[in-house]
Image (tube, rainbow over the protein chains, first blue to last red):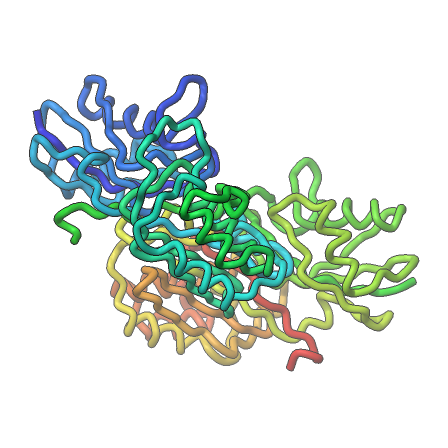
Amino acid sequence: MYNTMLYITYDGTNYSGFQVQENAPTIQEAVERALSIIYKQPVRITGAGRTDAGVHARGQAANFMAPFFISENKLPCAVNVLLPPDIVITGARKVGGDFHARFDARRKLYSYTIDRAPFPQVFKRFYCWHFPGKLDLDLMEKAALRFEGTHDFKAFQVSGSGVTDTQRTLYRVELKNRPEEQLLTIYFEGSGFLYRMARLITGSLVRAGRGRLNLAEIDNALRGENNAASGPTSPAVGLCLEKIYYDHDL
Amino acid sequence: MYNTMLYITYDGTNYSGFQVQENAPTIQEAVERALSIIYKQPVRITGAGRTDAGVHARGQAANFMAPFFISENKLPCAVNVLLPPDIVITGARKVGGDFHARFDARRKLYSYTIDRAPFPQVFKRFYCWHFPGKLDLDLMEKAALRFEGTHDFKAFQVSGSGVTDTQRTLYRVELKNRPEEQLLTIYFEGSGFLYRMARLITGSLVRAGRGRLNLAEIDNALRGENNAASGPTSPAVGLCLEKIYYDHDL
């Protein structure tokens, strides 16, 4: 069997998330269906991260085992013609038999984009959270820095995922303001993310930018002493999985 | 009666164009329906330009007469809550009783965007023509300059519109290449546009960029001597009406 890695971009608007579930359209199901046609047998893929309903990806990664090998140049085209237009394979890579897209992922980069225009920008409406209220970007940047480093992010998850080790490292929580486009993007680069962690931190950062959450409260939450500093969960629409980093990327 | 001008942005993907027609959804119909609810009587709007099915607008303009006046600050919000999310009023302006959005328009600016990535960019798919083939941008720029100025654009229209005077002035036909985004945008600023003119010129420019149309052939077409240099019509998806210029904008 040959192990192949795929780079996947998708518009999550019309999907119930990445991971297969019954009676709901998912990215995984769509990609598996296309691959199963190509390989003429059921193919299962392993995604690097499980994005939620409505969340997008510019750089999702996955791998799958298949009975024969299709060249890295040809496979994306072959799969794309069988995929709906909101899912596009942008690359493929032959990998070793023991490569695992999720377990071998070293870092993940997410972006969260806020549309700050007075009225929603029509062409960005599926990819931004429209938040026209005032935001103090200095306060937000100071708050963002508090999240960098290794912390117990227990307060910044939606429970129910069954994860017991809630320590994670965020290498970067960076704001990029693009006033000419009236967009604000927050980049989260981390060793891993708890369930809804990026969206909860975004919610906290927006509260900080509104002057309704101070740095001490964030520090308390990062010591697990106060959940009230966490969130609210910002809408899925603004979140995008930008890139998965493996050993060969670092 | 009060005359009010509206600035309208829309995603044309799901509409059969701007202008009202029977049994098909149009931008005009949606805006008129919203205004008629607000003013509690039928309201008709006059658009500055009639965009085709699938064509977008960042800066469409329109005007309408109404029995009472709603302040420029409040009207957009009031209309937007009654509009679907793919149409957004971004501004309103009180204008003189004889102002006419179409007849008073002095210039129009269109953009046409080409996605040059090897595979379609998922988040741009409704707003770009995906054309991954090679393009010689120098050749395209030289070709674009030939269209600038006052010409008889008879060869650059799809007939059937009944227009008899086919002379127009293009003040600017400018390429903006954004290699980091793998996008190429062509800006067309003109006194007016014949039916499908911007899309036909785009088709000609792409042919020029492929080395399949030379400058002499374009010059011939602009003298009305050779229709073969015109088009093909590029897809509606890449076209966007950016701005309507009135006397107060120049």
